[in-house]
Image (cartoon, rainbow over all chains, first blue to last red; front, side, top):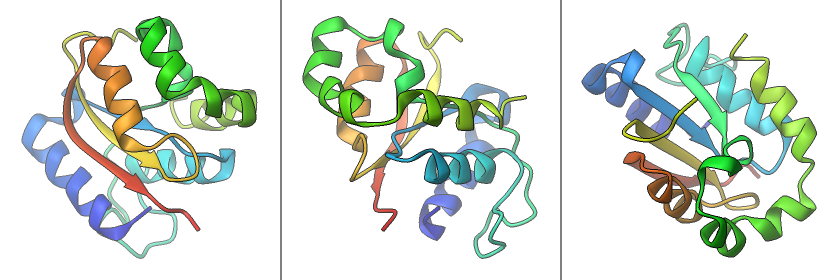
Length: 100
Length: 42
């Protein structure tokens, strides 16, 4: 995960509180999505950024898990195309492992 | 997990679902977007 974004997420967690902030991912691949999820829960696995060794324990979801809460027409316009080409099940499975 | 009224930070992906697209979705779900970006994982 981008080092600058790690810094921003850390600041946001400090500002809003860990319990009140949810991270939503849009990653194209399961592996990249899993790495981002790991970074905001147990810390940067590459030990390169501001979240190295920082266990924020934030709630993290992929947008593909939240379809039922999104307006149908907006989903159709913004996400449905990518939903068809991405490996939805694999991405969701990977992100879920960091919530358990 | 109910999104309505929750504060959310978006980490979009240029090759997946970009930040602005996710932002539109989450706004329609009643969430408060406090940060949105689009990463490039390549």
